[in-house]
Amino acid sequence: GQNIDQPTEMTATEGAIVQINCTYQTSGFNGLFWYQQHAGEAPTFLSYNVLDGLEEKGRFSSFLSRSKGYSYLLLKELQMKDSASYLCAVKDSNYQLIWGAGTKLIIKP
Amino acid sequence: GAVVSQHPSRVICKSGTSVKIECRSLDFQATTMFWYRQFPKQSLMLMATSNEGSKATYEQGVEKDKFLINHASLTLSTLTVTSAHPEDSSFYICSASQGRATEAFFGQGTRLTVV
Image (cartoon, rainbow over the protein chains, first blue to last red):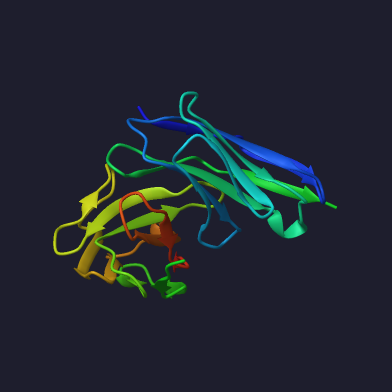
């Protein structure tokens, strides 16, 4: 079956750095996505990786290793507004998005 | 990024009535749109894939006669929850992609409460 695993919840301190991991087993691979979702709102797109390596976008970076079925989202200089759920999703061979359960990130002052 | 508009954002209806939710891609053509529902503190659950001009493809366990999906044009898909019951209360979200390998853009979501 297809499966995406990510931690249920993480806690970090304002101003610090946090890394959210995601491992996946899917039938085929056509890209990995990270989304941010605040409570009661729809997800918003953060990053897209289809090749191995690190993609940096401001305070957020995303890494992919296709051979390991592994990705992480790195958030730097954490702000209180970064408190949200972070969803990892993979497009399989049929270009269908397979979603992880999300990681709830709690930022403490 | 591309814009997807979903309406209404919030609706309260009585048991037994039907509710229609609209999803529009405002600045691109979406041959495929997706409908999700999300329960509190849970991830997105794909309900169905909506293809323009053809019947929607429903995920296992989703009643197609209860959740009617219509994709009449390249910019509009609708989800109608028929004969709604309190257990249908949930957050419904649509998304659309410009192409198969590109990111999905989400509508704002619709909070449905059935009383």
